[in-house]
Image (tube, rainbow, N blue to C red; front, side, top):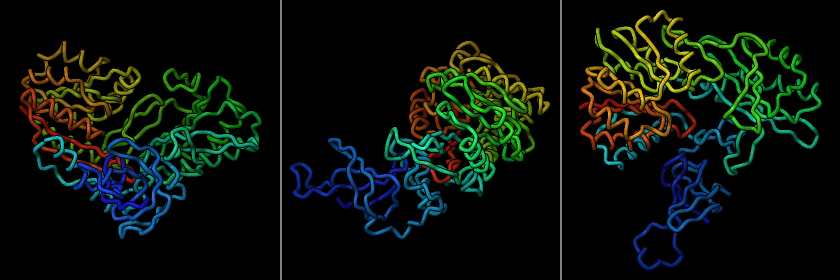
Length: 445
């Protein structure tokens, strides 16, 4: 069946409509059933195959591009039309920004949030090679040869073989190539290999390689380590055991080098351990943090509370003028990194607390009076109980950073219900070639 792609909507999908052969009763003025299709461009006319049909919408995949949109370009990645890692390489980057800006504004308005957000900005001038962390799967073919793979965008359990990725650096691609070559030439028993994760300190040039196996066996450990440490920049090699191929209870063994690597944001240096969360786009993180700093508008003597602080990067970045910065984080490994990061940067006015943000607020609301509060929660957003507690605090302002505009918009409605309002909003593209959008907002009483 043939459809016209009208625009890009949620999760990077293109929206089209199925035309009724015969107008159904009650649907005389309907454009037809909504169909969502990935890897398309607004203005495309495509032949599709339906993969999942519901009562009022459907999902499909492209069988043929009948008439390409004037906006369509050839994706530079040879795996784009199979790999689930990117949605928009067939659009120029300026068009990606334009479409994301329209999509973000539409989402905010649809949720009833009355604000004129700032135009979408890019985190950096690097729409490729920006990721500092990425995972690949090991897969073994019938000839006992390993390849690396990413998830196939069409199939939940499917994989697509890849030799490289344009979202990570050339050194990361070299690590993949050398490791694949060595294992295929020298290692006989390959079934234990499950995942490869590479982390990079882009501003420093450090690399951490993590080989994840499903058992405690790492075949030819010494040969693998020697292969990896011969690559310039590799400062750390871990063997990580994931029993039952679960990422919940990992056991890590440092095989070579330093237990951490380092990254630089502005004038600050931060350590990264295997367990710690760090913003995926190192090249764009300074742009993001500068927006947060501008919105926080910290004056000499202000107290800052950085909730969901992770490894402490935002709080440390904001600490110059503040009297005190208190970071709160539930992940103990992240708190350990945050404390070390404060020492590395000689920030004596910064402290970190291992606690759940909701429990911390429940016991410390009086300490938040006249303070600046930074929120950077996981994709699931905020607990309504946390918002209710904040509504009873006489803070100066809240700066809310989110990597999920949908839950951000939901939470802003909750804030409005308890008498707090959003006054400024900046969307930022931290994830070029993908559908993801970051945003930063200011909330006041």
